[in-house]
Image 1 (cartoon, rainbow, N blue to C red):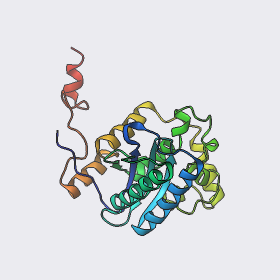
Image 2 (cartoon, rainbow, N blue to C red; image 1 turned 30 degrees about the vertical axis):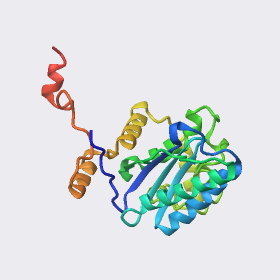
Image 3 (tube, one colour; image 1 turned 45 degrees about the vertical axis):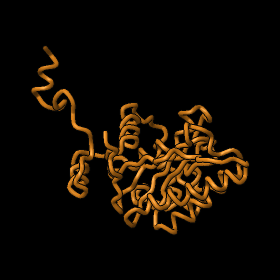
Length: 237
């Protein structure tokens, strides 16, 4: 099957995943995380990309970001990836690639999915059983979004800003969202959309993206339309 072209519309948040090649470790010491975040800030500013949430895991990275110009995210990830590979190879006396060849991404329907994707990202170390609570993991935007520890590279999205009238109100409201578990089917939605380059959103949002881009925003249903009365009736026989 041909690889889908990337959806690179400005002004729409993207969930981005960059994995270590063959799931190998990408961060070895505390300094590595610091270098990566420093260059992420530099290149996000250079290519006019607003970073809202992130997590640096030992062998992969998640970002929630909005590009303001076409291909801003692609340029940011490419420049960051090249720099960080050179840094790791020089620091640890290694050679060759560090990242998988192609990062994964999906466009996000802000109204319905922005905050849940941000939580999904920041809960990665909890799901991986590295920590019990997201606050215990240092290389995460949770430290800013929920705890109020200033992280300069981050730009708050309107969905976050509307959580309260003050920074403290927004942080407390955001933190309260973590008391609710993300449903398993929603986690699967996020993963499928990101890994397969589909769009994460409601039907209306997907239709709008299809009109703008000229390609499908979700896979075609197999075995009939599962929402149709005819399909449901057939399943009873």
